[in-house]
Image (tube, rainbow, N blue to C red):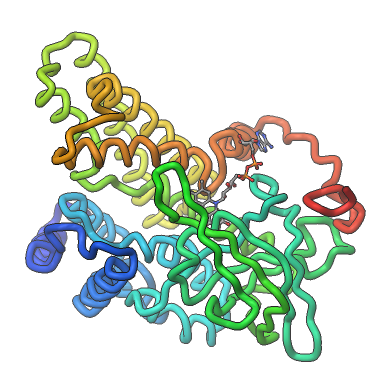
Length: 403
Ligand SMILES: Cc1cc2nc3c(=O)[nH]c(=O)nc-3n(C[C@H](O)[C@H](O)[C@H](O)COP(=O)(O)OP(=O)(O)OC[C@H]3O[C@@H](n4cnc5c(N)ncnc54)[C@H](O)[C@@H]3O)c2cc1C
């Protein structure tokens, strides 16, 4: 089906009507707990109306429709500020990875509650000594009888404070090379042995956390994919993550979206300024190119050609576009980007968006790491030297090991 044919138009009309009737008009809830409750109620309504997991297979709890319908929904949703943030990691990363690699029991148990927003997920990869080089992680999982016992620490875990489950990457065999001794697990974030501590960022909020594991016990069958094949599972999840981050369309209300920046220029009387007009034209051109690139990846994926390393192009281009928007919006707002009248909500939102923007160049793999991936896997440039690739992990100096 193309997005323009009759059934596509019917679907678009149904989506628009549902969103107009059900999308919240003001951000719901004053506290994080109230927001989460409102977000769960909204996600359940979305699921019950048949608009969650639109292109996921039916056996994975989804609607079994094509990516075209998913794209129609995304296009219509940009006009609304939907409270779906708490589900982004579950739906964009953990869920698709379980759908790809999980056992039949895991798919049956986890995917539908995840899609309905009844259960929230987080991704437990990064550690104090393992970020870009995540294969150097030290969290240990040891099989004792029919249970894995987990000890270690994760960091920057988005949404751990309200998550029910996490996809954990841990070391199961330190005698193998670093990429070959990892395993991915499902863990219950409410189990004894899991401690979540919030981390505050420069916006003043605490979107991510440290997570400590102290003799956490999980069942032997909590493995996603195969034991010691966690690197494959991690690469699968990171591929979903990059497409999910890069392909995300900013809601129209977002202060860094082109229309909002152009409106800012109008309200500040700078719409005729030739320098600002040039910057706005550049911003618009890049935003359009990025949209077309993402649309093309969606269509190619629908035709059976998954994005692979091109997800890194989407992720990198999305991060660079936000920096471009910060530059233009900052030039227009001037001192208004850091100081505004008490009753000026737009000043508050602009400052929050600007202060949040550096995170996009780090989360999901830094810009430099995306450059490396694009260079090696798309442009065919020589690989970075990796002297520690074949040595047993136990012999390496990484994190707190061997220091
Ligand atoms: C908002 C946010 C949310 C996050 N959420 C999560 C989450 O939910 N779960 C999770 O597991 N992690 C999460 N992270 C962590 C994120 O994945 C890591 O921060 C990221 O991978 C970088 O790792 P690092 O911070 O350890 O930096 P490092 O890896 O120490 O990098 C430091 C600097 O060195 C550069 N560098 C490193 N290696 C290379 C190389 N080979 N070539 C060139 N340059 C290099 C980097 O680009 C960077 O500039 C989140 C991060 C942010 C900012």
